[in-house]
Image (cartoon, helix red, strand yellow):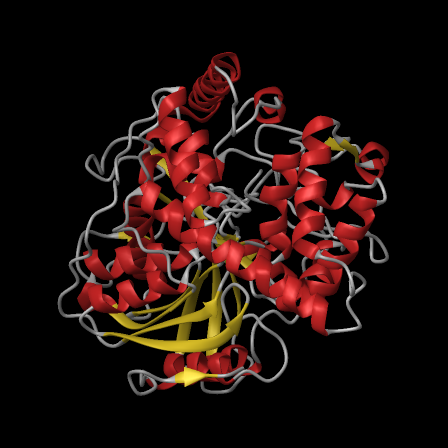
Length: 535
């Protein structure tokens, strides 16, 4: 769910990586992605400051491609990112805030584009990095600045278009009171007073988001975003949709396929999010997958002498750190110096932040160092980001706003939350439910916007072959979700990556899974059903 640039997190080139996501993100599933850790970290440490105030101008010309009424044509212009090269172009389109009232209020959705490097491109490829709340335009900006996030084959054959879904990034963003975004409350309250503080913060935060964002706050669900994607496709005027969605982006893609199956050319869903599950079932599956990945990290440290924690019982260390931080928060001196994250970390900060550092196998060494530094009294790697403004680039309300419209929480009382905690402990004894999904269950309690897109079975008829990819040991999007998604999509084909990490496409180095995605996007041919890669 997490793939976003921020879910990899980074500090200065020589410093400790800091997760910035779901705690937010983090900007969330991500994934909130398996984008090679080195490239992500390098990009995240560039002069990537908040975008300039103005995004791409909204075009007024019309295009009449595809079914439906005329839509504004995309007008490409320079992008408002710092030092963005001329080849990176941005465009915005006005879409209805409420698609049930197309002539009513409008909001802006923004994309950016890098042209294909080859002489004979297949067409355009829409890209969503996940989250929710992940910015596709920021990923493409990273690519334009040299981060090499996309494969050579993708760049050769496609104009790549980064999508900022409604409420995110350069699109009209969800805006919330930063003081409320930064107010510290426990997502694992132990008593009635702490539970009331949690629900009150959630309610006040949501009300501030509605006050600052306007009617859009009630319409940032994934169905609305999928309808926006169809308007973008038609505005582009190039025929059927080519789409690559990572993590939460798989939910957006599957929703589009349900609404517009005959308008899909290719659709690759990498890191499957199953929106047919209840929110408690989502939590149980995710926290189990997360604990499995943590156990495998501990096994790696026990086997590999390059791990800085080699010879340490990693599971016991995590338990001790959580207990210690719950009693006395661990200082985060880098955050105290920079001012962009909390100056101390609690046990739940560690439990939730660990998941971000497990997303990328290439960052195992970073996780080992982060745990070692926390043991030595520096918890900076696990400190949640702080919002500097209503639509902060990292710590913002977009992810929670989207999640609370897509995933209902059954939490009304402290006893409800305690029952869910026991269910989480049964699925993951060490983590006890800690996961991005837990932040939905706890974070949406008291949220004022209605659930407009609750979980339900997918009904997709008439779509071409759709490729699903998932790792067997993904710490965020559990492998069984991909199996369920394949069963739900009559034309879906699951290619399994037998290995670790969240998503597969953005991994650097040799990857048969990524090669299979590239080949499918170009040719429309999936690997044989049941294919397993051992990347």
